[in-house]
Structure formats: structure tokens, C-alpha cells
Length: 141
Image 1 (cartoon, rainbow, N blue to C red):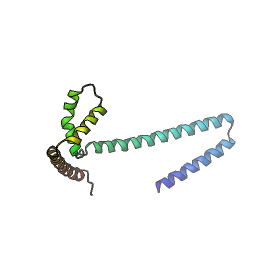
Image 2: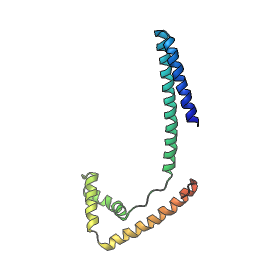
Image 3: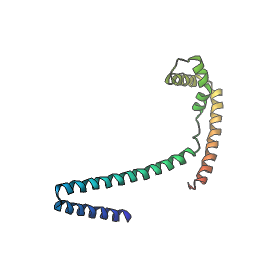
Image 4: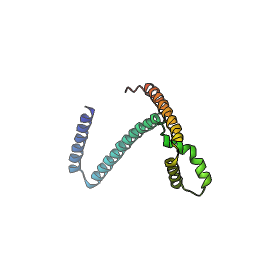
């Protein structure tokens, strides 16, 4: 409803400006167009400010959100990354990740089971924290 009214007011303003421009001298026309441009810039700035405030609030809410549950592979990588970096200090991150992927493929099933159990525990943690966070944010699922 407000948008329609604002749109009508803007259209009326445009028509009034066009009518005034027809009757104005060259200098007056330039002055009117300059004022119109300033008003447009001002409204654009206000719209951007409002948009930035909304984004800022969304970021604040997202920062308080619990971290996602980690997979067995991620837990394995976090556990072994320091070891791989110590063995190969000249490796870049991509190369370290390749070594970790190769190690994960060759790891024994018993060791994988340990990381899978840790992953399941982390999923339970995440579920509890998300339930609590959603309640705090008054979000119903």
C-alpha cells in the first residue's frame, strides 16, 4: 500500500518537474535537474543504509549460530594436519590437503571407525546446539 502511494507521489513529482521544465529558462532548467539529481542520490543513499543495516543484523545473527557438525574426514584432517605440515613445511595448503586425502584413503577401518564415532558425537552436539539456538532466536521449525 505504501509502495503504491510512494510510486504515485514520485510520478506526480516527475510530471510537475516536467511541466516546470517546459516553462523554465535554460538556467532554471539546469538548477531543477541538479536538485532532482541530489534528491535521487539522497534516496539511494538512504536505501543503501537501510539495506546495510539489515545485512549487519543478519551477520550478527549468523555469527551466533552454532558451527556445523564435522565429518569423519574433517576430524581426521584436523587431527593429522600438523603432522603433515611438520613433515613437509614447504608444501602449500592444496598439497597438504592432497597428502591428507591420500592418508585418509589408506587408513585402516578401525581408525576410520574412531573418527566416524567422533563425527556422530559431533552431529549430536550440533543438533542440541541448533535446537537451543533456534529457541533463543524464536524460530520454529
